[in-house]
Amino acid sequence: DSGETVRVESHEGQFLAWAAFSPSSRIRARVWSFDEAQRIDAPFFIAACARSIIARARFDVQSDGVRLVHGESDGLPGLIVDRYGDTLVAQFTSAGTERWKDVIADALLRETGLAKLYERSDASVRTLEGLEPATGWLRGGPTGTPGDGEGPPLELTIHEHQWNLTLNIAEGHKTGFYLDQRDSRKRFADYAQRLGFKDVLNCFCYTGGFSVAALAGMRASGASADGHVTSIDSSGPALERARAHVALNGFDLNHASFMDADVNASLRQFLKEGRRFDAIVLDPPKFAPTAAHAERAARAYKDINRLALQLLTPGGVLFTFSCSGGISADLFHKIVASAGADAGVDGFILERLGGAPDHPMTLEFPEGEYLKGLVVMRKG
Image (cartoon, rainbow, N blue to C red):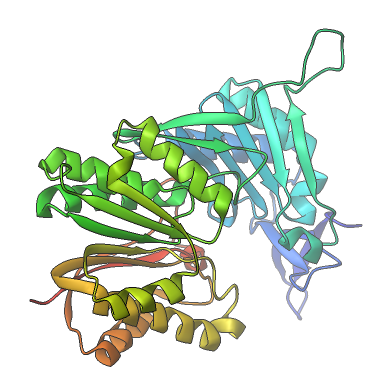
């Protein structure tokens, strides 16, 4: 049956692992344990959830928005759990986690001491597992009794470093927000403060996390009086939330502009106009979900990085990212280097960036390194 625990053996009949069977997926088995003596039962999932949550208490996370369970890295393939204040949001994306959903839900609430758990199992990968989308309150939602209302709020606010951000857990990407870029946003604010950015471009801005970080850094440096951040995205609702985030954090909206536009076309137009920026963020969506898409994605990454490097002032800083699992860190470095060569621009690689610590990569699962970033300073 779908999600059933199966014994995986070598051709010679030697035990390899206990795994969840996914009959509809190209990945037919997702490993629970390599220990033959391990029983895959309710106590197994209760203990795994507890280990993941306890580990986060030892990570450096400056936010009340935290990734509590990160799939394979926490020994629970197909399970993502984020905490936003007093609310948990979970994605069950494999047949195995779907089968154990109720046990996992109860374990998460028991270990955190919380009462509210919302399900956002609407990722497209569920269809590859033969599963229908599922969203709504798993625990702590409306009971249907008179006077109970519509249930807990879906609109939430989290605090991250020196700023506040909002999300709707029933909408938006992932579980409602990109927690993995938390510390990269802080690094961008640090650069803005130290280098005194005055003209910043945030591409694929989504709900404006990097825009808020830039404005926070400008304010700390004393450059906010004449500083400006331009944010571009193709989603009108995301841009409206980005605008609201600027106001929420007490920044003057006269120092921020928002463009509902195509990033590539906008970058080319800026070049024609002779515009230049002190800092640019490129945080595009996933261009290569698998290695099979890598060649086409490499061209897309190269094009936007070439344009961005041309738009930087000498001494300007580019924060560029790839969240594509099909693009390795080494390949991404080569793509950005090739973009610089085509642009006739050289730069210093100041830092390599990755996901925040609550989105861990493990020794046993290096493939978990999906988010790669470079901080490049254009040579003067």
